[in-house]
Length: 224
Image (cartoon, rainbow, N blue to C red):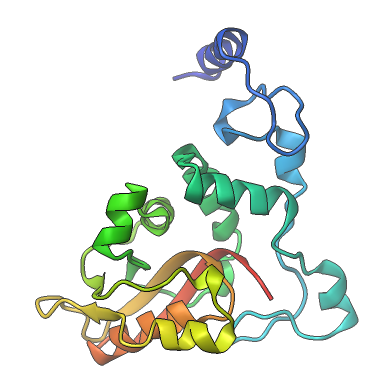
């Protein structure tokens, strides 16, 4: 679809089905961002300055403290709409935000999303991490595995728990399929938000036990 046709379609859709920005309430003219106007989306800034090479946490320097964003505002609204309100069209722009970090991530051989337990998947009807991972894998031209890593027991939502409870909550909650071939492979693990790191750490333990050479993590946002 050329730019003229795309612009005309956006204009028609806006006239027939007007949409307001979820952040500021202004009319949304560019539907590629789904629920947000472009000025609000541009207000999202990636973490800048020195970071810990292990966990990605901004280091306590004046530069890092000035430039490190908190998980709030437009980004927080976008993730909530995407994850809990079924605004799956946000998967692409959110994944593109994560890809701004890709040059800092070690080279990978395969992309794997953090899985949902089947009961949670039935309830939500989609895995937000898989939608993000699909876009990221396409961009990197890497294979996407959505079945090798599995959540083998249901867990409480991590948002309801404190740091210690989160770690206990996901212990031995993940496993790799016996038929999976991850020996020597470098995995890029994708999730929407990183808070304490308990979930991705539990996933990484399972992946390393299955023979993965290394596990790197890429998320759209981090808390704390």
